[in-house]
Length: 473
Image (tube, rainbow, N blue to C red; front, top):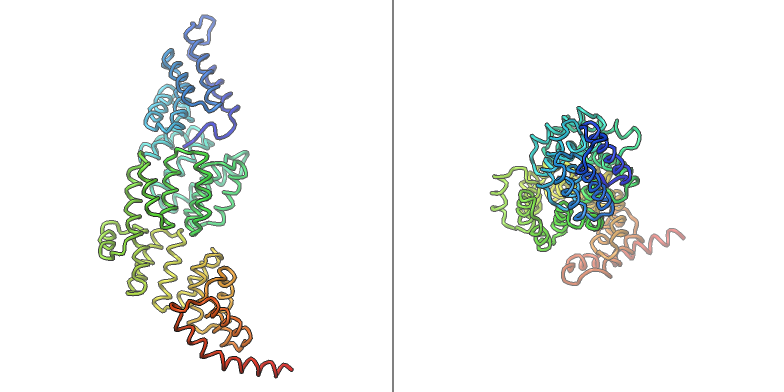
């Protein structure tokens, strides 16, 4: 939601003072015979502004309400009261305050934008559309209205062409003087939704350069990290957001999603239980968390019958069926990827399912695309290495296995397959070194078969190494 104290406090305070003076003048109050109650209302309003600027929201709210008690037709006090209520998490009261401000001054676009933002957050999309469209028609450079409109378009799952049209407008606005960090973040959100991840990251860097603690930009950064499977980065961003807005339902919801993605379902549910004003999203996430831990395929398939585009349930079925029913898993992986096309985890799952189904050429094509987007995704690189190995494309497989051993040097499997790749390429010294590293790290029980194979291979390999050394002399 737009927050007038996100930018320059001095500017917004001066703006409100100007509005107050203009309003009193136009209403006949700022005349020589203005009565004492009007002067007192302005005085109290200024005290409220002082408290608001210092972050003392309860005191600010008390003063705004005192000013309104003296003068009920005071739109600036209603607007600022609404902003204070938002910061205190009192959304329903804030909505009434903004509605009253718009009622008192029908062409004032700042409270329109704030009201539209609240309506979007409470899923009142039709009313939000009317309010925000009017605000932009009255002021086509109303940044808060565009931020709220972006949220509306994304939450209502607008068609790509609608998102593209809005993105063109935001790109135009951000190319001009002094765009806000929130506007840059909205641009990034649209770019991410349209699959333009590189552009989204650039827009976010501009947003955070302008305002390092901007909530919208940080949240969008966390979304990208989550989509890329970078849970550590997402978690760090969530910690920053929690410091900026410790009582925010949006932040708690993000934390719960990150914990669920990391498998910390109990902790995720604890956080969800503390959220009171987003029941629909909480219920949906709860179902998804249940799906994350479920191994009951028939039950999960029943959920898909009711909600055919639930990406979490589709992704879970994709993972569960890869071994026992690869062809069925492929279909669920494909549907999960289509349901959330910008979620890299689904694409990686699809690639892994292709490997399980022994469709290695298709797997290589997809996993190489993923590698181009997320070169450090270990799961994608491991599956790419496997697919290349199975196709006996040993030079390419070797490159992937070398990367895997550099990233996780304590895992024996990568050394085993890297050694075989070297062996097949006649690179016997390298093969010997990697076989020995495998034996050093391997588990005597779980890796028993591979250990036996290596031990059988080593004597003849040693002869080839000796022969190679003699030929070099």
